[in-house]
Image (cartoon, rainbow, N blue to C red):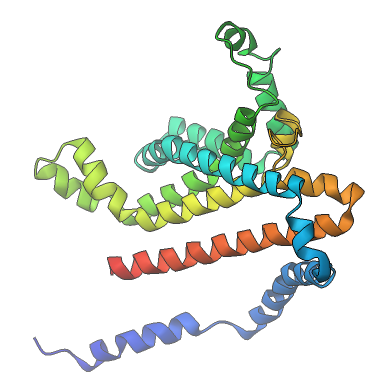
Length: 279
């Protein structure tokens, strides 16, 4: 079939429409960018670069950094174990129950972090709702490394659910319906069709959840406390260093910013790679 002239021009017209941004939007966009960039630049300019390496490699700093990386990794795995099924249920169901479940799962996004920590303490603390049961089992969760992992999972899982649910809704159910029609079992459809189609959203949600785990502070200090080597993650170490050694606090903050920038860059690169592969 011979392509019509308008069909050959369609891609170019589409790109022009996408780039047709009202110029007045550039002003608030620039101001918004400066609102984020100026504080980061100010922090970078005030770092004591001559003593940067000794400041970020002290025993307390390295212990906090490694604890943050370990707990964030475990918390991200838990986010995947719980968040993927939740996302599929939310994306493939409708009605009042689904709306209530979505509101409940996303609640940690809007809760003040300290409130989240108090809620966890009331649930898993020694005098909490499950305190007696945990005592019988010989488990003490509050103010332990386990408490750090639970707090990080509590605040980070909504990022994974939000990203993956959006991806699942965007791809629709057409291919799943075709696979089911051809005789594939629900688990096979989930494993061979649903997850591959939503993979870019899953990767983005996973990395964002990991970044949120690294930066978690309020719920952690409320539920887990601050014990060096056990519960004192890098954000808590920065908070404490701010009182005793502001130069170390600024240097460690810059390390956390660098890790966050790296995570965001990996998210974008991986998402673009998967999108290109899908197309």
